[in-house]
Length: 166
Image 1 (tube, one colour):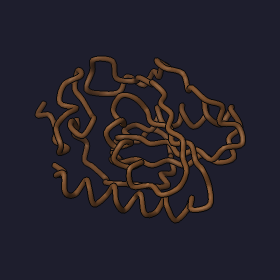
Image 2: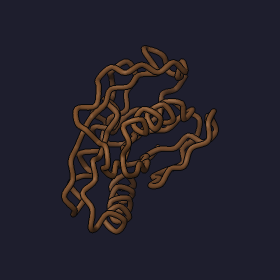
Image 3: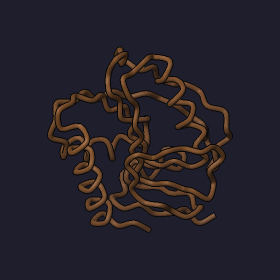
């Protein structure tokens, strides 16, 4: 669906925007595990400001191909973000419920700012309004795998973004 060259171009574009916006800042990038780890790695290699990397584990899929809507924290944030600029790094935003949950979770920790960077945006499934500050691709309502995204822990290693035939 999206080949590695298109992904690379999008990551470069997103990094350029973030570099511009944060040129005199030192943000904390928070990636949602496990799906965003590949995107996060490629993105941070292109960022030119001092930064910190953090991970949080959230789950709303379990072993299903559709979000069940109930979000659970599987790994807590490992640093204090109060007074810090935070960028959430998401592989894909589907219903928006997980991202809304994370925005609320982080907001309670009193950061200076929180912005959202998402590689893939599935607008057709959105259940809650969200502002994506750094959008990659708008994608159709298909179950995507590859470039860190999985189906039952399979296909994360694919260099392209593909979809599962249902």
